Image 1 (cartoon, rainbow, N blue to C red):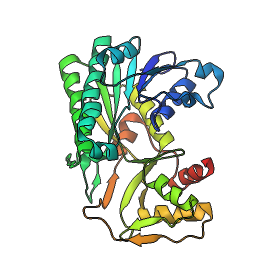
Image 2: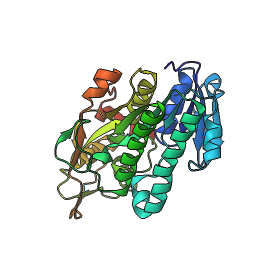
Image 3: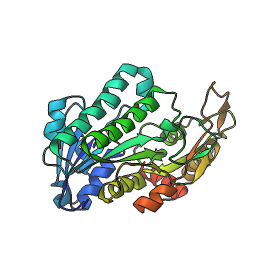
Amino acid sequence: MQIENQRFLVTGGCGFIGSRVVRLLAQRGAAVTVFDRVIRPEVCAGLPSAAADRVTLKAGDITNTAEVQAAASGAAGVFHLAVLDLNSCTDDPRLCVQINMEGTFTVLEAAQRAGLGKVVFSSASSVYGDTDETMDESHPLGARTIYGASKITGEYLCRSFHTMYGLDYVILRYMNVFGPHQTIGVVPAVLRRIRAGQAPIIFGQGTQSFDFIYVDDVAAANLRAMESDVSDEAFNVGSGEERSIKQVVETLLRLTGSPLSPDYQPAPVGQMQRRVGSSAKAARLLEWRAAVPFDEGLRRVVAAG
């Protein structure tokens, strides 16, 4: 599907990843309808006026059928990024069901009724659960969290709408996303403590490792998924650069010039040890690869303040 001169709906378009997708679409010449619970006009910050004029902001509830259908009207495709995050899902499982499961059904139903060409659904590596293996997309889905279960549900809803109605879709399973102005996650948590003059905490020996992917690369993967001819497929979206928590902390201490030393504390029971995925399928079928190396991404995070 062509990106230029098309209109796209971006649910969760004021969020950490969604706002990058919105800006990239506008820069590519697309018109964008941003649908989010809380509207943040700064989503257009830094865009040339011509690109910013192509962005329409709409506040709404992802579970409200009429509001979502109105937002989908006239769009060629939808990027579904609206989500209740992992910690909030754990704190309020019922709200997780409403937003992540019922909300996804509402978006897919609106897309089907409006005749949209494709849905790009933001899933997560959480669908795999905790595994020592490097996961490709054929790896069993082993989520044991309500958040992971909600993402698996969203994936299967996409598949069912494709089978029942012919609605094209692509699923993107993000690895550990990081970038400037992120509010939750390992990188911002460590950086907050360093900037407050507090020793960053490492649980256990810090050997837990993840595939860290820079947020701009994730946004680019979304556009490639939409504009490609690929449908009815799921893709891992990662950098292939595995880093331990100890390495993340040490790199941030070095980049900030901090004299602090890590505070090692006992690891909580059941702490995840490794989640790393292969993104070879995305490189092959979507012609997408991560472009920002891990250390460069951290430098950008630190420089952004």
